[in-house]
Image (cartoon, rainbow, N blue to C red; front, side, top):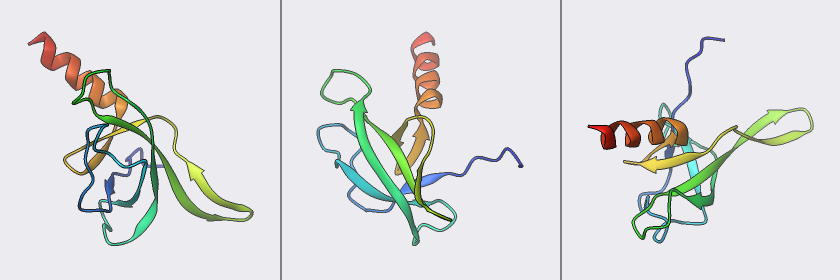
Length: 100
C-alpha cells in the first residue's frame, strides 16, 4: 500500500455544497476518471446549524469482490469546489483559519 488516498468528485454539475441546496445522494467519480461513476455519496448531516453550513456525506463505492457489491469508506466528507474532502481535514483547516 502506497499511502496515497484516492480523491473523489461529484459526478453531477449541479452539486451544491450547502446543506439546504444539497442532494440526499449524488453519484461520485474519482478525480482521475471523472467520467466513470464509481459510487454514491449519501448526505448524513451538516457541519453546523447555520443556513450556509455544508452537507456531510458518507461515500459508498461499487466494488467487485466475491459476494460484496459495495463498500462504505470510513469517515465523513464535505463537498468543496466539487471535490469530496475528508471532514477531519476540512475541520482542521477551518480551525486554523479562525485562529489567524
